[in-house]
Image (cartoon, rainbow, N blue to C red):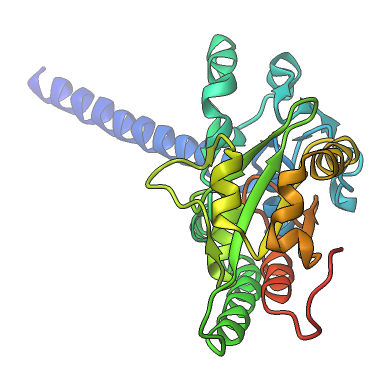
Amino acid sequence: MKGSRKVGLIVLGFFAVIGIGLGLLFGFHSTNSKQSHPRIVATTYAVVQIADKLDLPLVGVPTTANKMPVRYKNVTRIGSPMNPNVEKIASLNPTVVYSVTTLKDQFGKAFSKRHIKPYFLNLTSVKALEKTVTNMGYRYHRVSKARAALKEINSAKNKAHTLAVHHQIKPKVLVLMGLPGASYMIGTNHSYVGNLVSLAGGKNVFPSKNQEYIQPNDEAIKKANPDVILRLEHALPKMVTAQFNQVFKSDSMWQTISAVKKHRVYDLQEPDFDATANMRAAIAINKISRWLYPRDGGTAQ
């Protein structure tokens, strides 16, 4: 009787071990499947650019006027980056939803109501972009593609640095971000364009300890007297450009600024420029570098 009980226990133990093993196997397979066949939703164009460089599949992309990469031409549009359609995103059964840290406070709650936990990528600077691309390269087994993408950015940074070191005086730069239907904000060294200025060897006339943007002040701008003005028009560029032109024409203060007098005012638009870092950072650095240190005296776009 004792022998039969012992055999029974051994058999039960054997099947228990097999069951645990199968559970772990299927659990691993499920996790691995998510990594091998991810269902990724990109809510901003900057994230789409990263996914394109890393050859990642997407099941949802933002509704944007920017030219979508061919591979994502027929992918479901999920609304604008500023106001994504959470219901539509949920219907896509995503394994991960990517946005950017600068939009976290804006619609984080809307996602939590649908039990969706978006991952906010840090794209506040070129350095942050490089770290994000590297991490995603490892996560999705695209390390070589990530390195290739970053090589282009590093090359642009080195080229800009080489050009800047030959000049003893850094040009003073004013960064403005236009707002549709309103006026503009001043971009500090902590803004993305401000970071590009730094990498290109310029001096931001409005540095800050922690703020990305600050309210404009005519007297402070006049006192700073920038050599170069960069006007970011990342949303509704035609409207914002018209607004900028009207302000610069109607406000006599601007006619006293060195950058305006010498026609060194440049308009920054998508896809090369945006409020957050993106995979066209190399092009952006090269352009600003040429504007700050022109070979022919520099003229506006």
